[in-house]
Image (cartoon, rainbow, N blue to C red; front, side, top):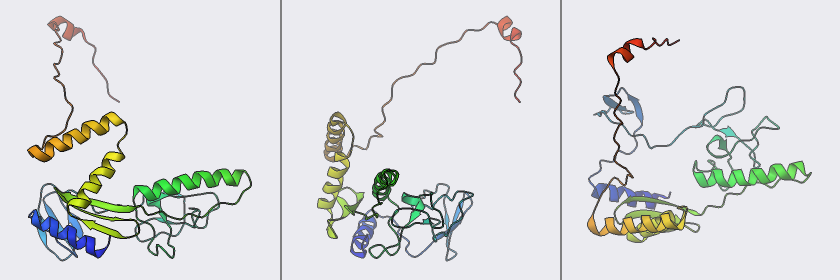
Length: 228
């Protein structure tokens, strides 16, 4: 997202008393201490990683790789130096004029590339030319907390705060499958908003383990189990 949205998100996190460290990289973690690139050490028995992924390279496919371990592909998602191997989504690195660093490693990119590739393969079998990929960026949104979010939609239109938060909730609700689920989740959101209820939202039921009665003779007659 843009620097403007990044600054807003940073300010929201600070309001929640979150310590944000910028310009640092995690170098090591031994289960007790996190070591950063500048030598700073943070004691932590729980480490949650949410800073991106790398491509999972397959053995036997030799091709040029990007710095985040993705295959270079052309505008048809064909892996360089190969005629019949294609890569989409997180595995594909497709630099272009509108995306000099490749497309973001997000689900919408993978979905659009997959849909176009399926059509292109059909066109190829029917003797027609393939169509090049062009990413339709519908925007990006990120929620930070209650009434706090950032959104960039429709070619760079930027929102923040309550309006962005409500927009994020609307889009999230719209993408949920089945109308009944939408109603239930919307009702839970309204209830949680006004009551500040932070339930775990787990569907559970009482479980009683059935009693198993075994005699001593029955246990002695059991054959030993061999594990190989």
